[in-house]
Length: 131
Ligand SMILES: [Zn+2]
Image 1 (cartoon, rainbow, N blue to C red):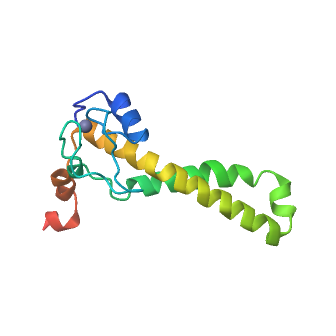
Image 2: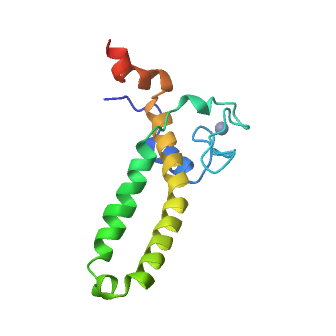
């Protein structure tokens, strides 16, 4: 279990807001999902905190399990004409996915920063390091 170096909740929320988890002043991303190498305000090396597949998995978890499954409870979804409902549902899911993915990735990086997990730690857990 990783030791919590900094307050977890505050740093996760800074990441969710798209700000540097260390200072909360400068933007975390320079493009849609591209993390700034260094923070413009506090010079923290943000590229050292890995996100890997965690944000994508959490995004699938949120959209798939918390949106799609409950949506199927409503009969209008599965009784309507698929030519009408499918484009509407897929467009909504795509918009939701694109909206929450950078927030989840920012929160993930904030969590990694808070726990002190860096890219060198992530390499220790790969199958290549076991050899
Ligand atoms: Zn900063």
